Amino acid sequence: MELERKVALVTGGTRGIGAATAWLLACRGAEIAIVGRNADEEARRTQSQIEDRGRSCLLLTGDMGRADDCTRVVRQTISHFGHVDILVHCAGGLVPGGLFDLTPELWHQAFDVHVHALFYLCREAIPCMQQRKEGAVVLISSVAGIRGLPINLAYQVVKGALPQFARALARQFADDNIRVNCVAPGIIRTRFHDGMTPEQKRHNLENRIPLHREGTPDQVAELIVQLITNNYITGETFVIDGGLTMRIA
Image 1 (cartoon, rainbow, N blue to C red):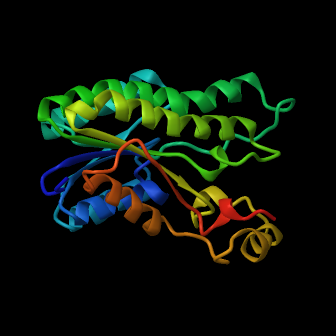
Image 2 (cartoon, rainbow, N blue to C red):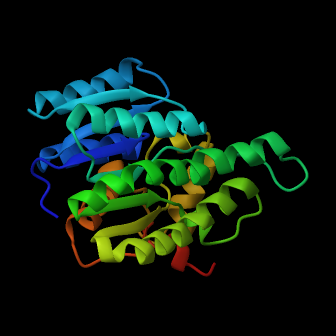
């Protein structure tokens, strides 16, 4: 897919991996809509950086755990730009708790933001892609959805659902030239991991990650953009984790 004059909607696009992806897509020629929970200073800074690059950037606010907000941001994107060609779902967040200390409210919230949001986003975006005979969707999973952990049950389950969501959509819409792929990052240098203690960070670098360093949002964004532009990849999940998931001990 050539990105010049394409329109990309990036949820969670105001910071972290989402912001890095929106920026790189803009650098490659796309017009951008980014979605955040609110239009705070960080969100407006991301918007300004993209606009300073000479590309349009529509800043939208919404809670991706709400079906009506998911529907609305796609419709606003299409209304503003005339169409949408690319959907990247980065919105999410850690959901703490194991089986006995995870509340039912948090369990359902995890599915709303990570899984149910995709159902509503894709139902609005894919018909536009079908009309244009081309489209790309990228879902952001996690290595936590591939390997079992003793904590964060809901987060693991919802992230584990995304690769299958990608495969199912990829198979259904292949004849429409719409490709759907999934990215599973490991430990990336974002606010998501701010809760780690210095000891946990040191243990990760010394013992868990074979490359002995964290990834960056820009590195994940490069992979996402590659999956968008390469027209012969669909239905796949790509791990980017410095070797974390291949380590036995």
